[in-house]
Image (cartoon, rainbow, N blue to C red):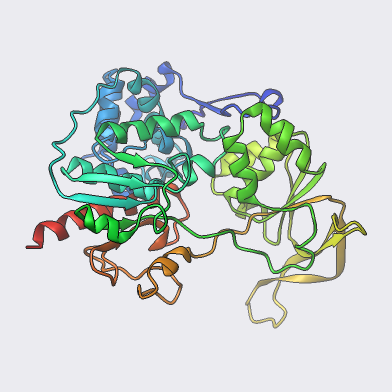
Length: 454
């Protein structure tokens, strides 16, 4: 038996709305899939999980029909079951003993079921006695909130400072609701609040609250979890023209507007023919957003189709919805009209070649293959820079050659006293679950550091 696919919203409907595309497993399919788990004595799936979730354990509870206890089992290691049950890249499934038979257990979908159905009955965890040392976490993204949750469970008093008006970081602002509903993010964050987290929104570290003020208020440590920096800019001529946007601009508007306002405001701002430059998940998400606004959209990438996005099923969803893939095409120049707005995109065809005959195959431009795409809007989705805000706040903090914060492997301590770091400040994470794992690691390391300090 192969892994069953989740229920999916039909293409005609989903390409015109922002409701969740994947609808998860039914109760019947969940029970059948849970029974397929071989309950390995040395589960490779748990070893592969960045958060170390007891996967056989929570699946066994689902098999017994207890979604509540399954969710509580997951929450021993992760407070983002709803999120990971939707957008995790599921390395656990690739490590499943049945993977080689193309029949890996649908762990990701089972985690989603436990979250969606167990949460309805979830009894609030008894808050740990909050008499321990005070710790400040700067940033409420996946790493910061995960660190806060584990520190709270260990008895610390934790305050999370967030500069935006909603918590969640990239989980809230960077993923469209048709992949990850804001309500799911909020539910997972509510579990962390139930532990006693004090999340202070619209509070910018260094401005609304300073390090000196935290010290005066007897905070014993500060964990920096502010995420990556600004958008990376393509070095492409014509990027100054009107009608050129960053992916972050599009995704933030999509997540803070109501669905009606998305079409009214964003739909009018964007042109009719759109080229998205990039190959990451943000590029794929932006393209799918634009399709829902009735636009003609092409993702332009110098490599192959298999390199676009993070998950194959998301790429297939995009193709079904009408996103075009202009692959093996390298953007050369954004063309503009006399009014200073985008009028086209000049590209050159790419192909693999071994020009020296030495077996060193590489992508190179095809001679005389330049062409122009007829577009009036460009969305640049080329990733993020290193966060430079930390350098402004702490000019003397030590960094690696890549510009990331240098931390002690055991304690996650930076070069400054009582300042620790996690998430994308320490390592650029491709997947949200990796950032969560970084937060968990930082919390455990910080606990060890404070306990060993006299």
